[in-house]
Image (tube, rainbow, N blue to C red; front, top):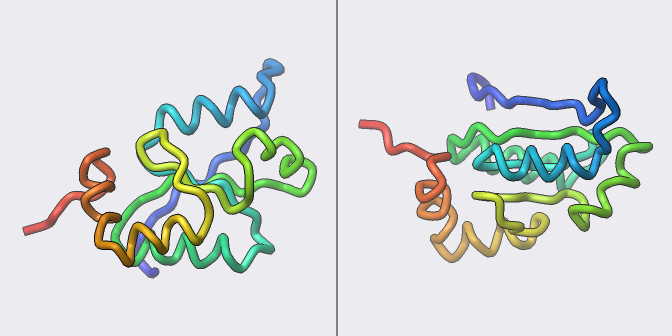
Length: 115
């Protein structure tokens, strides 16, 4: 995973925007978003697979207190591609093993074939 940069974003915003609203904004504005917890091994696998494929996902590491707000996105880890929920690790693996992950990433501009 060396050389692959991930953007890690905090959910806390000055000005009082609720975490649920911030999550919706992040999902809408970024082609690939992972809601994660540092202590979660499945979260690590999702981030590693995306990095191996060459995708620069927006990774949002939730603290335990913020994880309660994650009910807005469902389970953790939670992956969104092009604003659409993929689910957790099972959803990502299903896309990857079916050969649909890279085309889906290309559709949303998150994966560019290098020459």
